[in-house]
Length: 118
Image 1 (cartoon, rainbow, N blue to C red):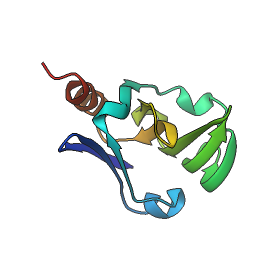
Image 2: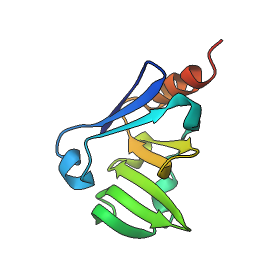
Image 3: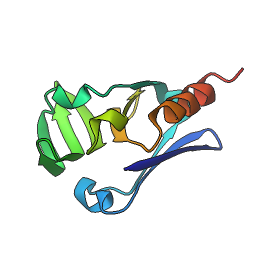
Image 4: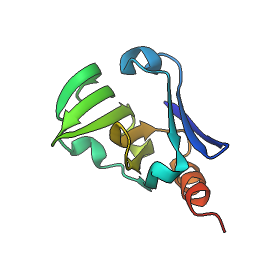
């Protein structure tokens, strides 16, 4: 599971618990200027993941780590698809972050409000 926050114009994704081991990553920081948006997407796990470059993939159990799909890098950290949030990025190593969070609606709202305040 991941924890998402916004600090000083930066989106911060902290990978929690054993997911750090499965994903081979503990933290991702993205300038808000490079965040295109966030959506709820419980069906995302049915999409092809591409080639796993580092991390863990046991279908139906966990998808975590870096995957290359269609010429793009995607970071995954999802066990429960009902809690999946997709964060679209521009001008970053990853084109998308697909992460499981405790409260998907609150996370999407946080990202969208930080991106477009007011």
